[in-house]
Length: 182
Image 1 (tube, rainbow, N blue to C red):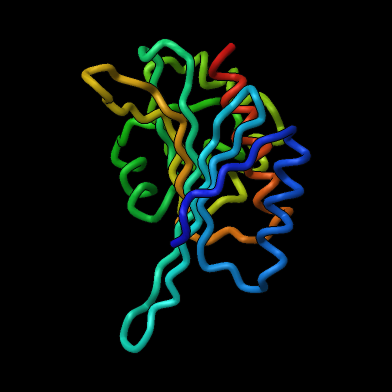
Image 2 (image 1 turned 90 degrees about the horizontal axis):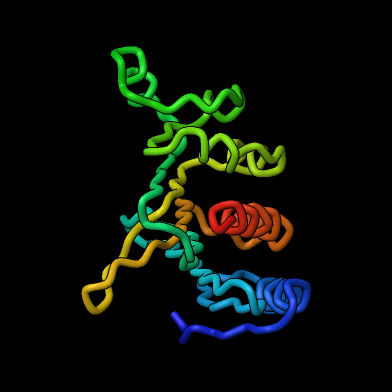
């Protein structure tokens, strides 16, 4: 993996750079960039290991950003799989947002349901999240010098290198950051 690239400018300038980077060299197997539009600092990490021989390979797209919110609000969600379906049948606690397309696709945990419902009120946010497979999204906390900092983190177990698809994911990620920091 190359060193982390730093991309600054407007959101459009940042996306022009990302699109150029992801399409110029053909097949992209890794990308590591810090995106700074003056409002948000978002880290984008893509790693695709094709494997070889008996190895099956792996892929990951990770998007993270520090948050400037109270560390009291927490949420985590991931796409629902077969085991979650069984767990829900047997009473696994899962927050219901009232958005059926989202509730049927993800398992959600939070300590503030109302804030989460407001966060997912945007149709585009729900559409993109329900289109993702094998992912998790939530507020994670990291401790640096004995101070806890909240981060929004999205992990997709796939190497997302299609610029248009990645752009739609990032638009939603930015909307979530803005919603959390209101």
